[in-house]
Structures are given as C-alpha cells and as structure tokens.
Image (cartoon, rainbow, N blue to C red; front, side, top):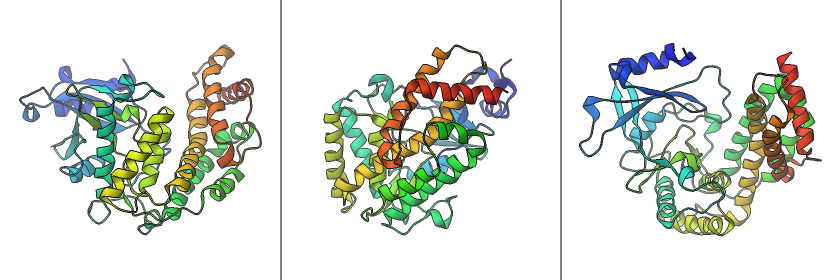
Length: 360
C-alpha cells in the first residue's frame, strides 16, 4: 500500500467525494498531495466537472515567499476580474478548485519553442487584467508582514525583500546540510552582497497583483483553446516588471517571440496603467538576473535532494543534474559575481560526495 493510501489528505478527499471509488490521485506535484473527484451538486450541464482537493506535503522545503493566506480565497476575490482562473466551490468550509480539463501549454509547446498566436494574446490579456488589480482593490487576508509590504512604487524595497527571503530562508536556513556543496560549486554567503549591488537602483513603478509563477506548466489549454492560469499560491502585490521577468525566465521563448512578448506587454500595461513599464530597458535585465541568481540556490538544493537513495549508483546517473546545474551557474556568473563555474564532471563529483555523506 502506498504512503498516500492512508494519508490525511486522501481521507478528507474520500469524505468530500462520498466514496473512495470516485476519487483520482494523488496527482503528481512538488508542493501538494492532490486528489480529483466529481461533486453531484457542482456538475455543469455542458461538461462533467471534477474538483481538486489539495494539502501541502509535510516537512517540505519552501523556496518562495507566500503572501496570501489562501489561494482559494484569492481566486474567489478575483472572480469577474481575472477571466482565466478556475472556479472555487466550498464544501464544509474547504475551498475546492475546479480541475481544468485539457493539456498544459508545455505539452503543446515545449520549452524554447514558440507558442501559437491565439494563446500568446491570451497571455497578454492576463497581464492586462493583473495590472488592474491593486492592493486597495483586493481587500483580502495576507500573511506577509509589514516589512514585506513596501509602499506603492518602491521597487527597490520589493526586490530587496525577495533577496532577503532567498538568503535567509533558502540559503542560510539550509547551510548545515548544504554549505560544503554550495562552496564546491563556488557559491558562498558573499554572493548575496554582490547580487544586491548588481540589481540595486530600480525605477519606481505602480504596484499591482502578480501571479509570480507564469510558466508553461501553469497554463492549461482546454478543448476550446481557452487558456487558463493555475497555481496562484505564489501571487503577491508588487512590481509588475518582476512578473514579466519571471515569465520570460521560466517560459524560455525563442528570441524573436521574447522580443514580441516584451513589446506587447509594454503596450498592454501602459494602456491600462501608465508607468507600469517605466525603466524597462535597464530594469528588466536586472530582474531577470535576479531570477537567474535565485535559481542557483533553489536548484542546487532540489537537484541534491532528487538523488535516489542508493549511494553506490553509477556516476552516469549524475550527468543530467550536473549539466543542469552547470547551465544555471553559468547564467548566474554576473549577478552573483562568481569567480568560476565547475565543469559538469566536477559538479557530478560534488553531488556524489554530498550524497555519500548524507547516506553515511
């Protein structure tokens, strides 16, 4: 029997679905244990509807700051304002999200490939709707403290708080386990000082709602070619240009479509909220560089933890994570001020040593 078979999340799903035979899952996911099931009182006539119940895994490392107390509460507050979000259905006080039937954008258009024009323009429409939502027009509970709520337009403070989270909650908090591995890869605490110097001096821009995780697997294309944005748990109020930078970094558009994305995004947000693209020529590369730097700290830990439990596996199994980390470190040379990037073979050896030490 799998560990999920008697889990608390599965038991809750069975209770809400009124039967174990109608639930599906757990679905694959990094942060949550997720189950799907139909609800007789929430089925729409045109198509059968399944609903999604999720609970976060216990003892999971979180690499990103949470801003809103509930993703479902946020989606309810955005109903009628953001057109591409799932419905939420309340069952005994628990918010269930409608499962969007379809395929991920990443399934239809692999990373580094262009996306079709109809889907591209729907992404631009989403950005336009996001800049219309401000802190004042979104009066719902937030869990972030006052220090993580800089005054409107203070983009430098906004980015500083994200750097602070990466430094303290991702790097420092995990040093006891990963310090030697980071050092062997050329990354040390001084890297954050260099990063701050590299990205400081952003231009002010009016704050708005950010999804903060718009990548190909967080877009679902339904059978009618409608694009839906899912996984809003990293949403926050902040610098609109940060949302674009995150999107570009994660989507990996081909160069021509990346240029078009920037142009269309500027046209869209300036029409709705003037000043949202102020300083883009200088600040967008800085924000993308922050994403490159952030990826070093999160992906080193993720790739190390993804190694299987056998300490004596063949070294070739380390080739994929080693090559990935080499690319990520190389991209972050400038923002982190790295003196060197180890070769994939040296990274593989460092991962192997770390894994053997952990197994011992």
